[in-house]
Amino acid sequence: MKTPASVRAATVSVAALILSACAVGPNYQRPDAPLSAAFKEAAKPPKGWKVGAPDDTAMPAAWWTIYNDPVLDALEAQVAVNNQNVRAYQAAYAQARAVVQEARSSLFPTLSGSGSGTRSGSGGGDKVVSGTSTGTGTVVSTGGGGTASNEFGLSAKGTWTPDIWGGTRRTVEGDIASAQASAAELAYTQLTAQSTLASNYLQLRVADELRALYDQTAASYQAALTITQNQSAAGIAGPPDVASAEAQLRIAQAQAISVGVTRAQLEHAIAVLIGKPPAEVSIKPVSRRVKIPAIPATGVPSTLLERRPDVAQAERQMAQANAQIGVAIANFFPDLTLNGSYGFDSASLSKLLQASSSVWSFAGTLAGTLLDAGGRTAQVDAARASYDQTVANYRQTVLTAIQGVEDELATLRIRARQAAVQDQAVTAARQAEALTLNQYKAGTVAYSSVITAQQTALSAAVTAVNIRQERLTASVSLIEALGGGWTTADLPSAKSLDTNAPPFPGMGGTKPDAATAPTTLSKASK
Image (cartoon, rainbow, N blue to C red; front, top):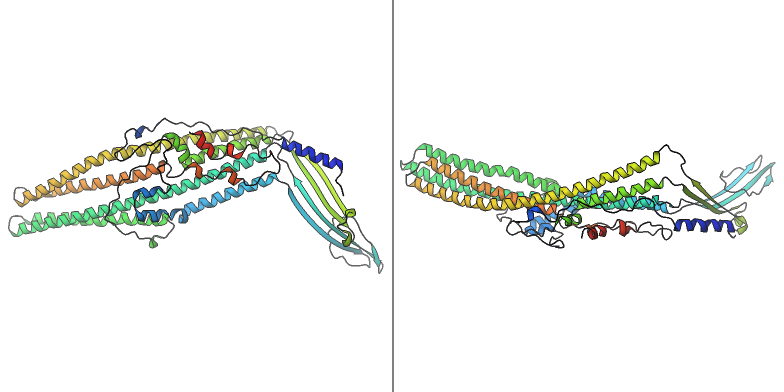
């Protein structure tokens, strides 16, 4: 059966209206960020570190490999797989992707189908077999003083609310930005876990270094105690000297044991970071010292817009908030809802699918709010205020990111100078300790002078180890502040999140790659 001309004309008119539709609301443009031309503290980097060009890509994705430690490499590989915080954000990102597809489904018609069969009777006739009907055709039979009839139906119904004003497209646009923000949050969570693990591991290795220092010191103090005991046996030294020497030895031994508490706690923290109970993780002590690595190029502050996941997250949240303005503005316009159905209705099952049994309907409804006492205006104002809030949050995130880089650059530069002077102090203290012990052997000084020299030398050596620890952890913090090996190119593109084409050309609104893809960030900051 042919569709009437009036129905065809209505369909063409609706399609033309949709094809000419545009999304209301502002198209997203990333606001400016408060950036300086260069990092202040990178003007005089410490020895062995360098400042690179803005397009320098020296930072490896597996950034922890610059420490040249196979154990650290093996531990870091487990973070993305087993860390429970990371897995939670992986699930959140999967949920955000599903939300995009859910919102996008609103661009398409919904179709439903049904079929029914009914046999009913009255009086002394046949009994009722079922009780639903979608048609009006009947066949009546009599028997035993009653009547019976058959009814069969088969139909398909469709409902569609075309996105004429772009409200749904803006919703999809916002959900895409939200999914990208979720992906950036996942990357930031993973980077934080990786940097925390690296920091804990390096501190654990410094604890090994400190334990070795105390063990060496105890061995030296044991030799000094033996000398004192020999001096006492010869009548040169008295019991107080022996007691003082033994006290020094026991203090050093106790300090060596105390390091075990810190080491155990760091090992437990590492286990949790890789998603395992502490009982399943044991890291053997090593004698090798971890070197302070040469930093990959820092670039300039503007590169943080491409390299920091938290900055990218804040930027995508702005895009999401901007899309919500369009959603709110679209509420001012009426919605057009189209309903149609086509099916068959017959009293005979054998004739159900014949053209003479076909039935159809087509209807359109235009509905909108005429008066709401300023409710929709308030929604638009609220959406604009929410967008302004995300802009402020974005700029604050950028400032905080720059501060983090500046802080760690300053820490590394100043601690490098301090380490050089402290190493000289250790050398001088060791020499003073040796000279004072020789003077004691010659009987020219009291043993109290030896104790003082020993304490000074040990304190200087411990301070030097602590400075090394601060430099190592600062190097990790700087790499984290620079975004690790992450870039905005690692974000899922808008195209990958919005995989299906719109029902008609022109219904996609602004192209996703032009408004929301991560390549926009890269181009805008160069």
